[in-house]
Each structure stands twice: as C-alpha cells, then as structure tokens.
Image (cartoon, rainbow, N blue to C red; front, side, top):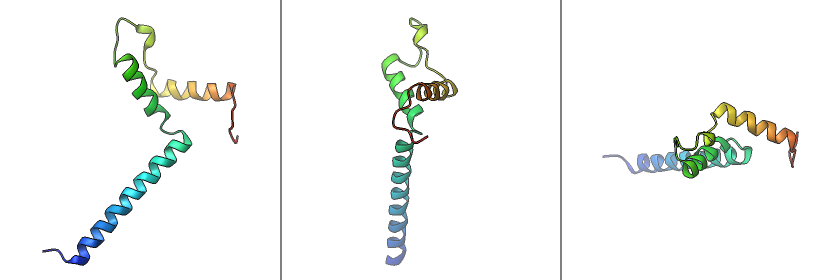
Length: 82
C-alpha cells in the first residue's frame, strides 16, 4: 500500500509534467515550429491524403514546406525581429 507522501509526490510530478508539456506546446506555437503540423492537418482535411483526380494539389514534403515558408517570409518580411 503506497504511503500518502508517495501519492502526493506522484501527483506533483504528474502536474509538473503536464505543465512542462503545456509550456512546450505554447512555445512551439509562438515560434512557428508547429506550422508544418498545421499545414499537414489542413491539407489532409481540405484535399484528402491522396487524390489522384487532383495531382496539382499534392502535399508538399516537410522540406519543401519549410523552404516555401522561408521564401515567403523573405519576400514579405512582416513583424519579424531579424
């Protein structure tokens, strides 16, 4: 039978883990690191995973996405620090 102290320690550690995941999720969103995941989810919802009838709507690879993202930011600098 676990002691009361062990249970509260486990609950505390669980809370710390949840808080750390929440902070990581927030920072990724602010920094734009989740842009690929958002693009992929949007593309799959809007175009499906593979649509042979619309080959021009092919989903970019992750590498192509980040290259396109960087090119668009360079061509249209808006509110960036550098």
